[in-house]
Image (tube, rainbow, N blue to C red; front, side, top):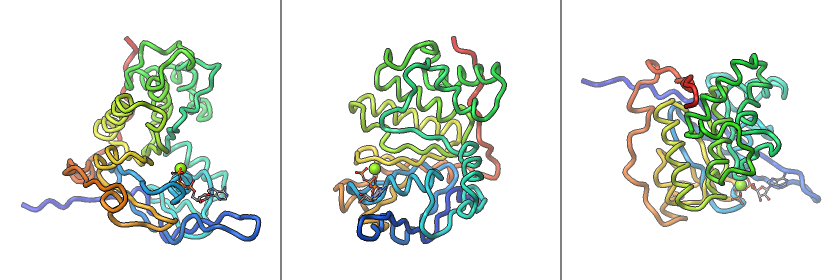
Length: 268
Ligand SMILES: Nc1ncnc2c1ncn2[C@@H]1O[C@H](COP(=O)(O)OP(=O)(O)OP(=O)(O)O)[C@@H](O)[C@H]1O
Ligand SMILES: [Mg+2]
């Protein structure tokens, strides 16, 4: 029996160019990059420092606009929307995780996680409940009232991940999410990302310099000098991918699969 699997592209970037103005002209940080990422994939963007990884993430995250090229996100052409409309799409569909956590120091873990819902105008009771559920799902149900300064690096990153998923985004974007963590804590955070990918069906796009992380991804998108580079894992990092577990997009035909919201469980 043949099964007609549907790979649904959730990110589709065509011929993207990004020029930054410089003193004497401009610098081309991305040069005609075309990338497709399917719903349910977990991919890494890798390449040497300065190759354009963060620039590409910023464009995928609708945090900046390209010089030219088109971008279709979840079936909607977003490259020619206004900045205002792009912000609306961003708040609905994307969750962000950063290397240095970016938590607000005077807010508790729970209040930090509630933030995306404050902007989303969710009623405070539901806000609190969903933030608790998100913290519980990253294993921090017991730290809701803690201030960031009292948490370890790994715990801070878990709070940041809870904040990234609390509004149930289809895609999580993470720029070097383990860059500030020791290897063991980094591995725990990667296991958490894999769980969010598998159990909640979220598409995950992350930047990493760590070949051990890269080889565990469903796929690696390589960049060099602003251009796509084939086989970056082997050619630049000297490692081979671990025989990939089938990407979620292949295991389950996605037309039958809905994105699973963060389960509403009360913190124990
Ligand atoms: N705002 C900017 N103005 C001018 N040049 C920029 C700007 N942002 C990035 N660049 C340049 O674009 C290139 C790509 O930068 P980018 O930050 O995307 O690299 P990266 O691959 O993320 O590097 P790293 O691994 O060091 O984080 C670099 O040469 C950088 O100097
Ligand atoms: Mg970078």
